Image 1 (cartoon, rainbow, N blue to C red):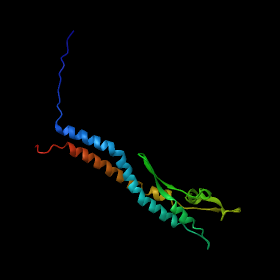
Image 2 (cartoon, rainbow, N blue to C red; image 1 turned 180 degrees about the horizontal axis):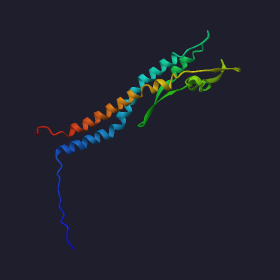
Image 3 (cartoon, rainbow, N blue to C red; image 1 turned 60 degrees about the horizontal axis):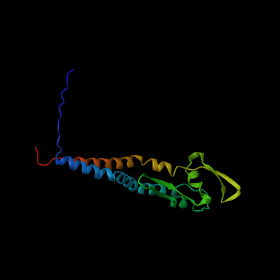
Length: 165
């Protein structure tokens, strides 16, 4: 039976490894928060865009109830701590179906005329909510990519050995 020889190689970590490890710990601990902050920062202009879309929905007839203004006022950012952010459209309990109904496109929705349950009408909507948000997907992706690239640069820069050729 032949004995196998073991060859051992010892690698001693230089100071740059400790610096990189510290940078990894720093970035890793705050990565989720940085990504969440980037999405929250991006959400503000998207909320404004959705609110403008709600206000620009067409209105027919001489009488108006302020529905478009109420739709716009109900749009807000709803953060989920440490996870994500949501853009939501809220409404009063008696109007809770209106944000979705008004965003239902050509399919539209059925509702009573000025709350009169004896007179119903079918109303077609546009896409004042989903489409403006979907249009901003690339911008959010760019912001998140920038945050990740900055974290990678911070870690890489921590490991650079200065003063050596």
